[in-house]
Amino acid sequence: MKSILTPNLPQFWENLYIEGKDDWTLGIAAPPLLDFIKSPLCPKNGDVMVMAAGKGFCAEAWAKHGYNTVAVDFCPTAVDYMELIADNYDNFSILNMDIFSLSPFDEKKCGKKFDIIYDYCGFNAIHPGRRDECVEVWYKMLKDDGLMVGFFGPLSDKGREGQEAFPPYSISRSELEVRFKGIFNIEEKIMPKNSVKARAGKEEIWLLRKVL
Image 1 (tube, rainbow, N blue to C red):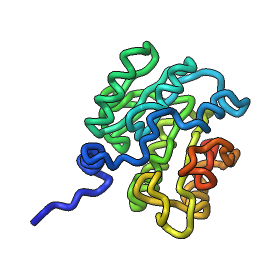
Image 2 (image 1 turned 180 degrees about the vertical axis):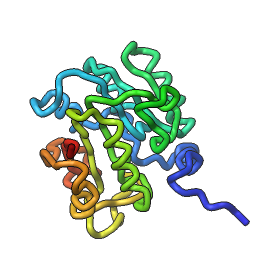
Image 3 (image 1 turned 45 degrees about the vertical axis):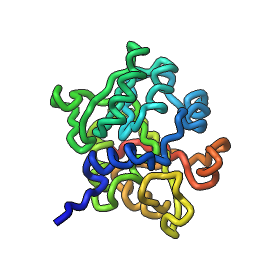
Image 4 (image 1 turned 120 degrees about the vertical axis):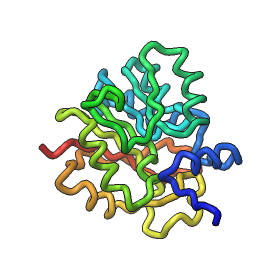
């Protein structure tokens, strides 16, 4: 019997890269991220973790702007690509591992907390059955005064029709609010002004703070 691959497994993503079906890869840092980094809402320094970093274009943007950046992914193609980028920066490191294995207390699993955690559609790529677990990972890896920066898309109550420029799943604003309740306070919601064409009007930046 043929085994069924799910987004929980690195081979699922590796196959998409091999087949050229990584439609979510922009080849550049997301333009709204570059605007956000320059905005007064973004802390001006600190340690940043980029989860489900893909080929690392957004992680590179953080490093280029002076942040100590750790990018996490478990897909071989993504990690290999990021290693080429990281060679150009002293403040860019890579963790080749499943985000669900991260620990702020185990040196082999990162071993630290962060001032900023950045997620660009990685949350949407996670099977809905593991999304609460992902929120818990954000919480434990973020410093108590840290900022969670989530780019969520496609934000839709109608599923994925016409949403090919994003990872496999959609999400709704109401689902996000339910999953964050009692864990993160929603500090700000931002509608980007310069999303790439395929994502315009379908993504938002949410800034979250831990409930202590």
